[in-house]
Amino acid sequence: MLKIPLKISKYISSRWMAEKLVIYLQIDKSATLINWAGAPQDYGLTDLKIGKPATEQVNFLDGMLTAPHIQVLPFVCLGKKAYAEIHIVPVDNDIYVLMFDVTFEHEQQQKMQQQGNELSILTYRQSQLLERH
Picture (cartoon, rainbow, N blue to C red):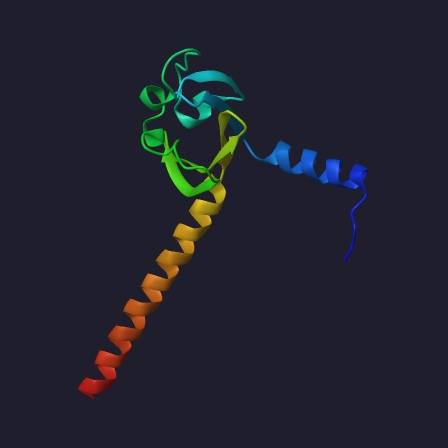
């Protein structure tokens, strides 16, 4: 197995992080927001308040903060055509909610799905024409 030098690993991580819009929320066990960093407004989270319940400020968190293991929510729509992959990560007595921008990936997936749908319709129509003749 190839072992990547720490310097290279840090470089890859910094490049990846620079290309992804990342924010994090730090939440305590009582679901209170205790810290955050990044640009939450890019995800439609415009008025985060430390010391207030996180589930009241971020609607998709309701019912999601009690699991003892990491949860990943792919393609969560946040704001105007912004999509994030949400990682809910319990660490010690806190819960970290990490949001990674996946808007481009979502758009690509939508395009591929549309192309697949169009191909299915075309194939169906072609088979109907062949049956008629």
